[in-house]
Length: 281
Image 1 (cartoon, rainbow, N blue to C red):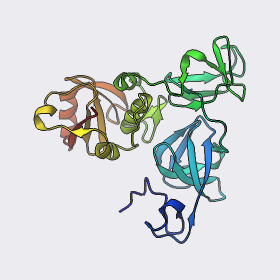
Image 2 (image 1 turned 180 degrees about the vertical axis):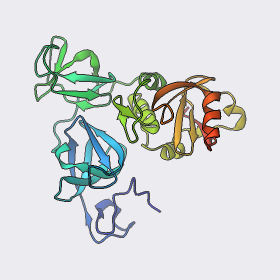
Image 3 (image 1 turned 30 degrees about the vertical axis):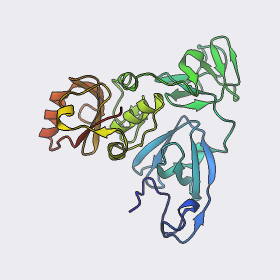
């Protein structure tokens, strides 16, 4: 059974690379596009009120297989393979390869070399872009956006501690399908933090449970280490140490640091027990 979240296949249409593995009326190669908006919603259906599955950030590449002529395009994100519907307005033809990424939680793009100017956009951590030149304290993009240099890093720059990245999101509002400091969910927090540290990561918590690290046995699970991932049904949290976790959750409607034992008891009272704890190294 193919996971529809990761398989660009419908009864009427499927990606060319899936021919011979799925059934569809026709197969298409698709066209590569680039996300042109700061944050673009990827939804499970072609409408603005359809459920938000995830988000794509400025500079991400996506392969588009279908456009419905009513403002939505169906495709697959190149970075994590997620499939869904994006607004047409958020797509542009790919430009030159990015040279930098946003390493701050979020930053402003100014129309000139002054922080007193009204920003033209707000960019979030993980956004990739091309820097054409540097001017004083600013990095300047080909479209003449001026971004604070201290909020950017080289495209290959990696954080040393993904847990520390996750901790920076404390206080961020909870948003189902979100993956930025403007709104984030539990698996989005894990994905953004691991990506910042150079580790590829699936999007949803069940994918992360099945694809990241190794499961701890009972003895190891009693001695949590920083960076261990704790999984419940539909939820994931990151261990900060032996006694606390950081996680985005709907109970607090925010990313919080919480006592591990308290969180386990609270979630168990709501009807869910820990499924597994996984260690990345």
